[in-house]
Image 1 (cartoon, rainbow, N blue to C red):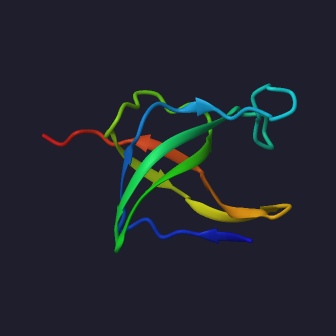
Image 2: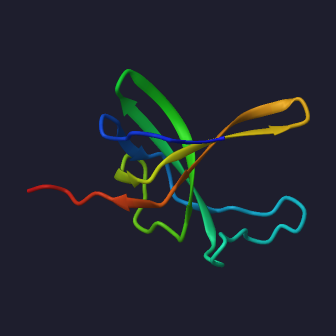
Length: 103
């Protein structure tokens, strides 16, 4: 199940640099349906009653990330998954953008 997430009340900050998403079997980088490489972005999320750290997958590398870089997450969805007895939620975004510092 794919669930859209309203991010209007949530602030996001990078928890580190984006890293390539690798295929478990081949160790090659995964791509989306258009052939664009996938990256995992570790993120701190707070607001709307939540405080958590999550990893968001996004197509295309996100440059300029370091710890606590403020981010804008566009088109965030949560998707449930199940493998054997294990299950959880993975997160995917259309885009992850570094927010410009205001003067």
